[in-house]
Length: 358
Length: 158
Image (cartoon, rainbow over all chains, first blue to last red; front, side, top):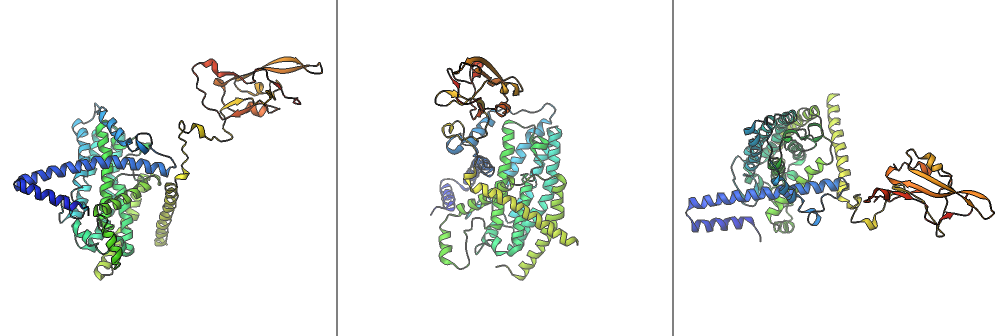
């Protein structure tokens, strides 16, 4: 049976036979770096195409269908165009910060990749504070956005960056509370343990209604955190031209949009890990036969399937809902999401203490 | 009561959002709803609406006869001088002199497809046709004479 775990173990054994442990570790690091960069490039291409196709279908259009069969090379062609374009830096911009910002946003996205379990025993870094690490690092991306907005020396960029700051700082709270509900139920911050706790059923099904509420809150909050419609006030094409990346062009612009899509992938991967069991196959109680069949599907497919389902959900939001105003955005967080998630956390704690979950 | 309003707010919000998602989800799962016409590819099977207004034409029947009496109602109705009716005198079967159309000059480059000429025509001699591929390399080709050469008015139309 195909498994990524086998490949990594075989690679490590081979490296340890050929080289001494230090060099083997260095080579492994290089392999991991190359793999994650190629994953990024691939995800960027796939997700942009997926977004455009989903948008087209929802708006009763066809979407890109000229470049390659069914338009599958459209995003590759777009990327080629963006690479060829001149990367302009405005005269009055703060040049150092202006050029640094896209890389900060990108680096944050890359760091977030570390604790995600892509398949059974296939994880870059299984730290014991995985969930804490994720919520700490994901809030750093606001620095990159603020940097871009400030350094551009443009009123649209600055407004977009300020909105983005207000938005990310507030929505992090409810995302954090939603994540906490699972931490309370599992009793661990480690990603592998959270996945292992869902051996006999995903938390979404095991944890009754409070976990479903937490899941909905998580999806809303991460949609806002990744600056996507209906919370895309930071870009708001119709009000702020393009918000914080108005002045960016060429490859630096491509890095911003790539980081946006990578962030969506990562938050959806985390959502899938916490609520939908990560790479765990769908197991139903004591149906041994059914569980056995589900085990035959490789764990990486399970993980990617769940992640792409959540990504599709977020894209569905984007092409259905109208954009919120700034005051409505903050109202939603502070008057609705936060009280609900606090109350919800209390309920989940009671459930966890009394052992009412399955 | 505050709490009741709060809960009903949340409920109404969520249910209206779900209603919207149901509609877009329906469109996503039903590709037959797609309205995009892949125009140059499907030129042969392109179907346009009946009321599509592309240019003014004068229908002729199999005997090369049309219904235009040369009354110039269309020329008068036209707001920007697109139509010019050139008339002639014809002697009909009973030996009576009668006005008839010699050439109905239609200048497509001036036409705004407002349909007023078609409405004004008392004998329904002209109508709007769903042709829209009007590009030519020479501007003079846009000035058309709508009645075909050698055509004459159909019997019984006054």
